[in-house]
Length: 210
Ligand SMILES: [Zn+2]
Ligand SMILES: [Zn+2]
Image (cartoon, rainbow, N blue to C red; front, side, top):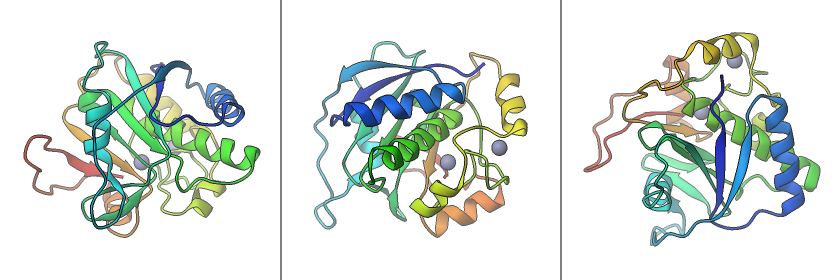
């Protein structure tokens, strides 16, 4: 089964867009509930005005008490991780949490809602143990552009559906940082099977996939 997720908003998403995205995600088997606003003390990078995704996410969920529940943070801030110029979202399975940025997903309500839905489904898929899928129409396929996001469907392919249903509910996913939709480097990682062995930053030592 796909573990449900609670949505925390760092910046509020337009309600109609979020309702649409949640409805699409529900159709894909990802159920969600709204847990209101979340606050954090993270600062942007001085050089880019972007926020480091893993730092921001860690800060946002540091007070979260329900460690067994999946959390998804929504933000309008532009995100990056070291070596990657931007990311649409990341999942940190050691935190049972992911973050999705709306910064690059713009469009009218329908377009924005559909893109946001795919990012939500994708990151929740990672939190449920899925890696990237070679089926380009599958929501778990790697995307490094908005156009690529638009091309894929807002649902898991049969293979991913079968894989996700085979994971034990309380699986220990380990200390993994999963990055979605970045450019260059991460794309290569995706093609190689999703994991790198890059050295770890000080206190959160992630392996990285996109
Ligand atoms: Zn798939
Ligand atoms: Zn991904």
